[in-house]
Length: 341
Image 1 (tube, rainbow, N blue to C red):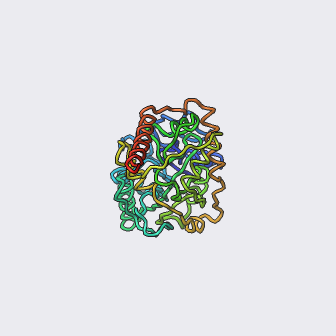
Image 2 (image 1 turned 120 degrees about the vertical axis):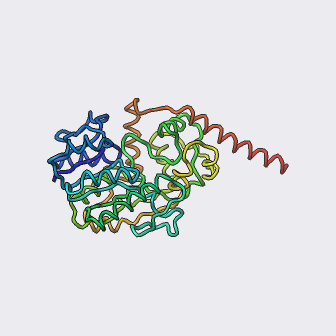
Image 3 (image 1 turned 90 degrees about the horizontal axis):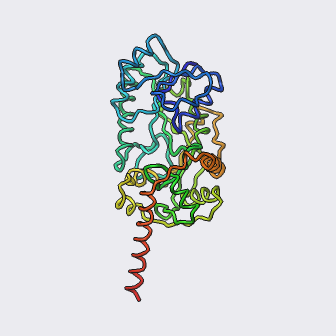
């Protein structure tokens, strides 16, 4: 199989790249070369900026692919460019959408691929929906061989998956845990969520590549494990070897008093109870099973980050914001009690 990935070094795509390289796939990565130092042997790089359409067209001239997958398209204009570049040059075009595109708030917490797409809270999700709509139009009217893949919360060894964190990543939350400081969990922590390790996602994704039954279809790829946010944070604290000191804060309050996009990332995504039905994926890829339990996967992530100081990026602004939120809640509690005395 000859495949081209636009991107190929991110959280989701890096595991697919490694597994395909081990299988002997003729794999090309089209990217700017910023993160290619640790690519597996045999992976070929087409170094270019995908936004420079003319340059890319010249570099892929004469090449045809079994699969082209774009991991870094977020708005319809980028898919329009991909259509111009790869129409007639690939047997399958895979677009990485997002499970956050599903109906929010949900009318049924059990999500299938038939769940409507609608998210009034998050522009990111609305853009993904618009991308899907464009590709479906090209499939219906022009026969462009699309497959739409919807990941949910996927993680790897480089990033601790959390609900509430700052713009610099999640390490500061882990640091607060290590220091015995309270950490914020949105809501009451009892809503259900699904975490998927990128190696599990990769197996499902590879099973869709070159799969004639996947053309014209949308498929989500997630674990079957459901966890509450309390369980997620407890697992992370356990992996760090500390006791969790949690403070539960209403999601609306977090969204109202932060410059982070918690309205989108929480109200439009992580604050909702979701349970994914992976029946469609398992029909298309009969041997798919997610084997990485979250407590095991996040333990490996923590071990990797602790062994690599360069991944321990501190975020003092987020740390101070957490203290202000927690202090404000404590002050409000004391004020109410004083009024009742």
